[in-house]
Image: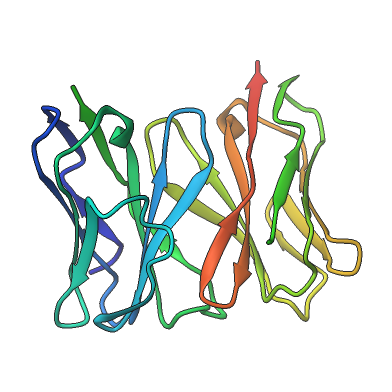
Length: 115
Length: 110
């Protein structure tokens, strides 16, 4: 596609429920990144994919968080047993390759609210 | 560990002023540096990308410079407009991911 697409744009869920966030990167981009932006906080790296593998998942805050990528394209970030502190905007970005010389393109994000 | 700091944290100016936003980092072993803007409730829009071998980039009223030896980058906004109001983020390309600064929240009033 022309840009990075994320869905849903907004998600309200009850504490304890599981949620799935989706990211559709730019066609042909092999690297995909997930970031989190909590209210009043900076952008926090979560995980990145090169193809379908995740060389760096060091930013995942707990084992309730997981992500996968299939077909070198769409990625899903799953949060199990959501907590209120998970409320944040989750941003996805893609680039031609990891550490791309030409920069990263971000999606509009998914605003997650846990009530 | 790379740390990226932006000064000032917030800035409110009348339109027409020329502005300087600062970004400093602790480890000069970076690849590229990218400036983004973020509008409230929106994602990030790339403004300028400075490759590690370059010292500056320009796009319209925006000019960004990079001095790796001193660990600093500056974003210069000429003749600011109310539409420039947003949060500005610098980000370092560090091997396989971006490391973001703390951001500068800019408000330009008419």
